[in-house]
Image (cartoon, rainbow, N blue to C red):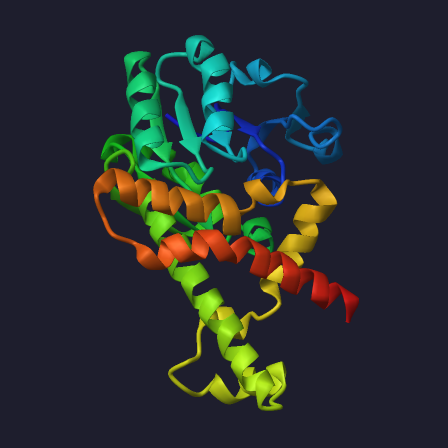
Length: 284
């Protein structure tokens, strides 16, 4: 039984999204052990319910492990340390964006040790994470999802079980492709309008009542702020979603035999475009 009275959560990865997710869990009343590879990040969250730890294996006494580390390799490294030490019946929630094949492999390894695992990536950004207002797309056994629901509800206002292991990761990659395709289109649309003397904000205001409206258009500048936060935290460009996630989209598509020519182009151009726009925004 997963409950605040009896369960401690071990949270690994306190970066741009992980930190506010951990804060949301603490605000909801959960007891959380906190780990990050960067010195000082866990200590910065010390307070009621929080227990900073120095090493990932210090999370092994927790009944639930939540991972928001950068990539497949980091997830595999942390779980390689923890899985042999977790109690039978423990749960692992992989909030990182990983390949579906990675998620399926990890779930099988966890099941061999009597541990339930969900690939449960999230979308919504840091501000929504702090409010517990993320979209959570979970893949794994239905029974594991139901056991994890109280924890997922603390970080997400829209929590959906989308299928077996790997399905959550596939849904997140689909989300990223939709989002970055819209972002690329918006950048080119604004460039076109600017060439004819129309300012960014005038275009965005004009399309707000038209079919060209989108979340990206309504939240123009969001990715400038995210890039700045990544810069402040020292996150390499290769680990940022407009780079890493798009390459994972192409890798997952190749493994499934799905043609994604738009994604292939985005993987090549999007990182430079987002980073350049963010730098320009900071100079204004």
